[in-house]
Amino acid sequence: MQINYLHPTPQISIAELADEFFLVTRPQDVLDIFGDLMSRDCERIIIHERNLHADFFDLKTRLAGEILQKFSNYRVKLAIVGDFTKYQSQSLQDFIFESNKSNYVLFTDNIDLAIQKLGK
Image 1: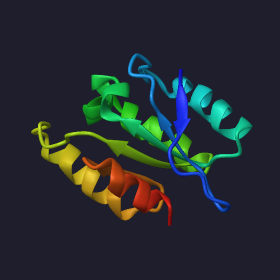
Image 2: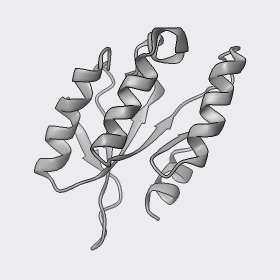
Image 3: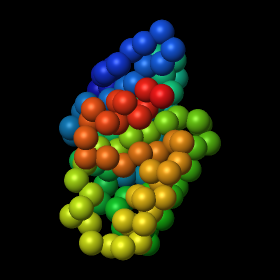
């Protein structure tokens, strides 16, 4: 897994999961990410849609809820960058809408917006 920092500042650092081959398939996988983040004193990360298993976007699997709960429990802010319009599930679209209201999770198609929102 390769993590690069996008926007280090005196107050915060925003990491990006840049490894296009790393795939989060279970909640345990995010603990590996947290280990890397914590060792670098970073509490914000951008993950690309391509790094999340397709089951994440099928809410019936509960994978999204389990993974995002880990981010909440560890107080790590997350931006997921990708094209979410291709998912036809209204419940997923509602989930994304509600998540974007939270302080911990942002779904966006724009990496610059992800950096801006995580930087607050």
